[in-house]
Length: 300
Image (tube, rainbow, N blue to C red):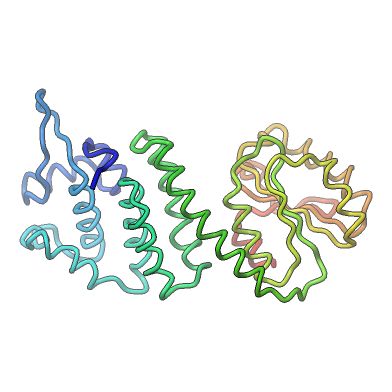
């Protein structure tokens, strides 16, 4: 099978596995757990199979196996040992590793296989919060350290969105609306990070609320008509980069003046990493700031 890339530096291995490069070198020298190749100028590099092996070894090591003992096992036995120790407590790290491998090799089939195995035993909510969220956090760090490219990030994010859309459609088809409030989900102008907001739409639907998902680049003026059509509206948005840190307070004030103060049944809920510097969880005028998606889910 063709691969996109098959040469990784020891720094790449450190970033992907979480094991320090110094430790990897010691494991190589003392226990011969990896066999790096070398360039003409004697610089170490590793192939894709080394990454998979190191991730498995890391999982075993984190669960009590000594490196000296792991090194004595034949290579073909290591995946079986990993499979044997997967429990309800360890499935998260194993699943994250499996998805990272699928991403690095641009292997859609491996992603589907790993996802189906998870879904056979876990709810989608558990998979998203326990696996996809930390996975995406790790991917962000890998991208920042140039271990992966934007292509890797877009590949895995697209597949996660695909599964999320399936769950949203299923929840919508089976939904029984039991709540009075209508949730209107939108992203402000120039804000394009919609995965978190998409997931919140799933939770809103699952909890029995009518959900209107508007998506990206919505101006405040475009939302006014919705308050005329629905008596009790919760406007929910997710902010990462826009509005910027020095613009958020002005944006909230404008929204309050245009929407909240002109309609007694409306509320504004905001979440996302762009709000972290504000350091509070509620404001005046029926506006609430949530510092995590979990807090919103519990409030629902």
